[in-house]
Image (cartoon, rainbow, N blue to C red; front, top):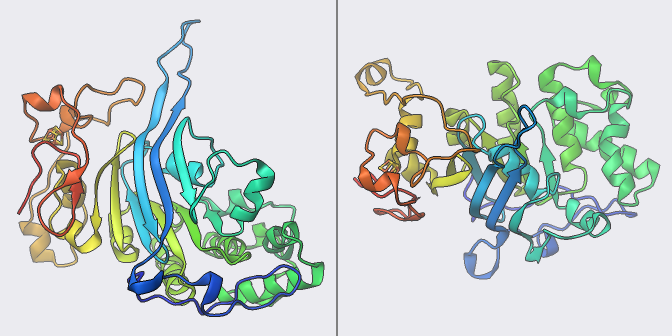
Length: 360
Ligand code: SF4
């Protein structure tokens, strides 16, 4: 996707009651003055703890699924969030839209702390902050028509039935379907088409940020490419910001401006996409990237694979010190006792939580 500094908003944003198209700038502007991107989302010390399962009547330790995460996302930026299954990335995404309540920490969106807003107060925020889910069919109400599914957030915002239906038709066209699909039901669509409907619904209120939670991982590879193309186009044309959550590093590389790597509920590395993919500093990032297939067969044969031993530890019983130390090929004694904090490493503004980062 384009740099957040070069994006511009060219798409209609819904305005309740008038169905007006937003001006290119003004309130919908993606950049702050002086050419610097404005902070759209700011996360501080975010924690999510789930109760542990009781076994034979005995309580278990709570599960710390997300552990003190700090994150910032600029207007118009796409931040990829990657990590193995169970690392806490989807829990993060759901907390950002308050589908899950954080145990601790704050989520600031458009300069406003939304962590403790009531459902009613959240309504105006939801207009600008939307989510797309992994399984498109499971996220669409099978009893509703496509028109109703897409129109629903507009009706909640006070749109008339006519305006909401017209907008739904526009959005279907925007995502590569057509108005002729308005009166069909979700089961009549393929997975890729259903995800396009999910995207249209997310776009209905003219959001500024979309949390895309594994949006293509349930789709066939060829369909994945089409949906990724669509999301790239929408990002560029609308100036949308995305938090793109995925475990496929090839997809994340393609769509993201920056990438954050998560392990055991923590961000272990974050940085500019080109820097992070070319010179990963954290051993976990290096291992993940070493498993990504290279398009050049000769380079693929030459490159060294880093095989991680064992499975990720349970977040109910995280290791002492660095959570990655039982699997880390570079671990030293310090790693088992001292938890590394995120700090700038090397050039290019990369940030990694490692006592012994790789710095080229
Ligand atoms: Fe490996 Fe130690 Fe760095 Fe953790 S702190 S990633 S165990 S080298």
